[in-house]
Image (cartoon, rainbow, N blue to C red; front, side):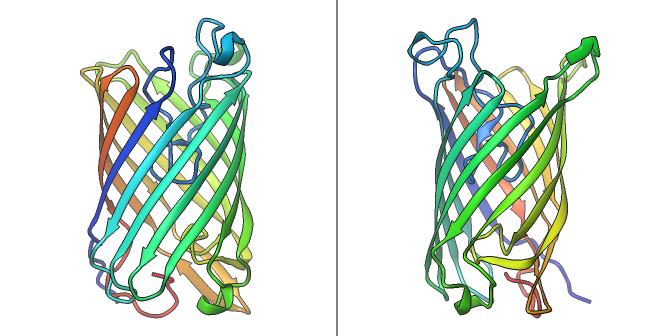
Length: 276
């Protein structure tokens, strides 16, 4: 049996917003340009319009939101050190639609530099508390088009681009002594390491979830999880490890959020069918 040890991952994320009427807070713009947390999307759209005052004084276009993430994997024996930088942005329309883009720069010591582009759309189908149902969560569906510049033949992948789909529900419980947000969904993907190493030919259904707590109004402490992805290339299983991460976010002012996180991304000594 494999002995799973935490891969050392230190993640420092900045999420900052443009314009004097833009407020910091979840969802962040994550590494794939989607409103959520470090790994997972939320059902909420990013930076919704408040008081009918959006971009250029419209009441249907929200202010743009930007996220910058710096990731370091320093103890991964099969591929060496990995440095991961992602820059993304998104915008909301009518407080129902979210459009996003991000580019990921992934420097893999024993492979090559990899670039990955992500284009995303999210549609909020049900707002939190709709139909006068206080405990009804927000519900959204979304899609992320992913394209990596890594030659799929180099790593045994089937393709260098594909589309992930997801459905997600998010609910905030603000009246608890410590406000809590719960988030859960299903991801439908062929991605190998979130698409950085390409895509298989078999789509997997993957569970993901978050627990977030708000402390002293300026701090968010949370944990998120994404289950193992199991895809195939030419009838051979290729797996991406289940991942979890714990984080602390701090809002020093209304326009800036800083995030620090520790994540477990799999067995540093793995062999066999796992991508890395």
